[in-house]
Length: 265
Image 1 (tube, rainbow, N blue to C red):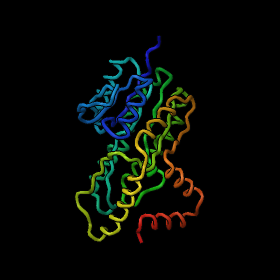
Image 2: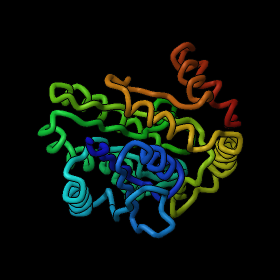
Image 3: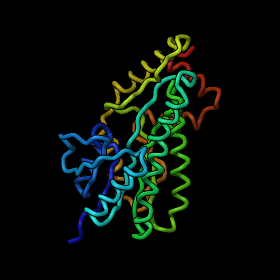
């Protein structure tokens, strides 16, 4: 009997990552990661330490999976966090740290698994992006920018690895009710406070009414099972609606809608 395919899920200790890891474990041997794995772990998931901001940590993690399982069929890039605040409020060091995890972490993981996937002439790199990588959220500037960058990286990668039969896809969830690590900038500027709080409160209301991470996990499982998955896969009704409106309406109308929705006037 053929062994189960092997999946590696980053950021799998909680939230969307944990839900994805548990869902894939029905049909895959799943290795999950977090910076400091602490029990209880997601059911059926083998947890490993990983810092996606470290070349050495990424090398060791992927090497462990290959030593233990002998192959790697699916990579799910999920690790990330939110730096919430205005462009002027965040330091350049904080912005770089946001990109180090959300963007360069994705690039490191892809570069680490591609040699084995090319050799196998098979594999799937699936990256959890965000609706914010298509429709930016006010006062999430550097998070938005990191996800926009991920969208460009992954679309380009899809062209490059197609000849090796490596599948590449993105998942763009809208608001999801899940613990999500939000990091405020070290300093805030009082002049922005009124509008920042309005925008962040509006996002909290979206999240309070949002579906749970199982919705994303089910979608990921379906995409992983597809022979020819779409590049972009929007999840949740609000994400579908906002993407459609961004495509349909003139830019000025979209801007007016965002300003009204987030009470920025």
